[in-house]
Image 1 (tube, rainbow, N blue to C red):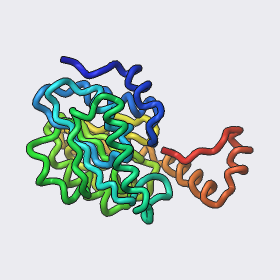
Image 2 (image 1 turned 60 degrees about the horizontal axis):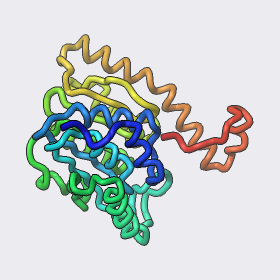
Image 3 (image 1 turned 90 degrees about the vertical axis):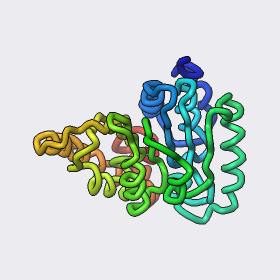
Length: 250
């Protein structure tokens, strides 16, 4: 059996679900999940209120295990919401469950309410797809990419949100992936990057793979500049330059 619904129907299902995910990013997730087979495992780190979770669960064939890891602890909730949102944690958890139920995917998803570094023992075997959208600080992001990335099966897919947008996530990518010997850079949809665990490890392939990722750094600098202007409440200046309402890059 194929996925639960088509991509267009999936976009409709998540239209009113809070989260930071553009349609082209959702399509990357959808295609990765749709390419899995019964018996495979998909792990998502960072679910918030279930927007990306619903996309993955809607696309994956029957028999694919879908694991959502999110502590719903009130930290790393979104842009400029790193800590201090404990009061919202219970609401986030309740809304997450309600959204999955409303989308008809609750039975397909196993939620592990824990921080990602404490959840390894709860997931067994290799991963066909790993989606990382957890803590955006350098240390936790690097740990997720390295430790959970090591569990991606040969030929499997690694997707990372806020790549070349968040300082911490980008730093982790530079450290772990740019000149790594395992994950091949496939491309990106805005800040969502896609990698495949099929790099041959030769110096030529690693160099080419690294240069393709380094080519995204000007876009990263642009995103940082936009964030600085918005944080400094100078969005009006940006609007005059671009003739568009400024939005937080994601």
